[in-house]
Length: 104
Image (tube, rainbow, N blue to C red; front, side):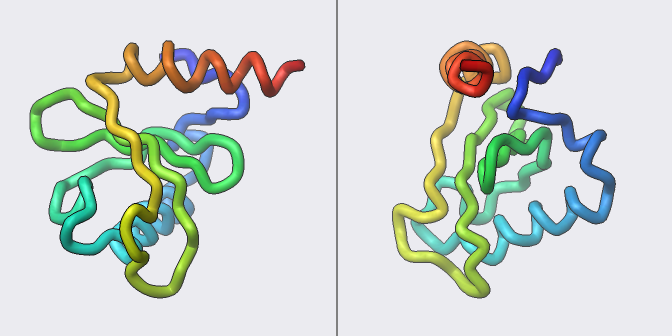
């Protein structure tokens, strides 16, 4: 995957940072949230508090999540989450438009 600014791969962030983002997602989601109880893996970080997680259920889906960095569970609909059918779908609908804004 070619990551376009402002997105960067989890590989560029380091393991400790990646783990902290995954832990934060677990803190914020509550029953009723689309990611509650689902295994996920951080793939990339975007601008600010945006993160891209792979949903590890065999579907190939990814979740674009805006974390709040709250110290406890959020109230729905937070953390704001949009789910896409896969990386290509997300890239076309999110990463490319954000990149165009970023460079302008």
